[in-house]
Amino acid sequence: MDQAAGLRRLFRARTGRAIAFVSGREACGRTRLLVQTAAALAKAGESVLVIDENGGDDNVHHAFGLRPGHDLLDAGRRGTPVEAQIQKAGAGLGVLSAARLAMHRGPLDGESAKRIDQALEALQQAHSYILIDCADGSPRPLSPLALAAPSMAVVVAAQSTAITRAYALIKHLVRESGRETFQLVITRARSDQESQAIFSNMQQTAREHLGVRLDYLAAARQPATDHIAGSLEIRLPEGATGFRSLGRADGRRRAGL
Image 1 (tube, rainbow, N blue to C red):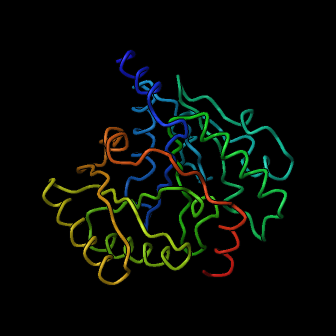
Image 2 (cartoon, rainbow, N blue to C red):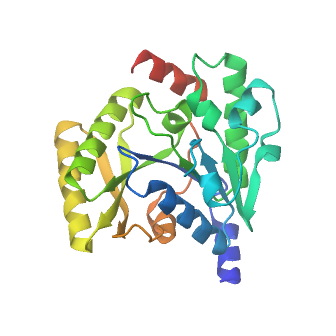
């Protein structure tokens, strides 16, 4: 396992994969799934950073027995070195808070946005994977960090209400960020056939009515205890592209574009 992981690190693209995990409702097992996935990737020898936008008791920090300290917002406002803000959650696994950045009201000034852009670029160069557990976008919009992520995974539970809300979220994000491709993660399905049926229906609807592409990333059966580390390695494109400019993403969000 260690030798294989070393070879993967040697031959992978220099820029790590970065993906934001969002959901139309909280009761879909998103945070738990992300935590297990991050731990599995780190165990396989990958360098993993989880950016935690949530400030509640059931967030990523709490799952790893950590308490949020400095925030990614500090890297923008004060120029605090972002590496010093990362808390170690295990070998090859770090956690960085962005809860205050997600809750920030008012536009980021140009210098702050530039510093955070530079910090994200450095983080993507230093890690194999960056997984962002995004704050719930309802009733407020998703954070500029979520909108700036190169890839976005929509986590949807296998329930009619959850499916409806997930589609509404995708529709909103198409308008808000201009994103044309989404990864889909189905949780709490009773079988692979159910997961595939949900994906196929959402994929067809999104293509016909929104003109966007949905890709199948993974499924976690009922209950949502399976990690998706293998699917990320196989199906998520190598990180050839980086984060969008945070200032641009913040401007689009506030303009309602």
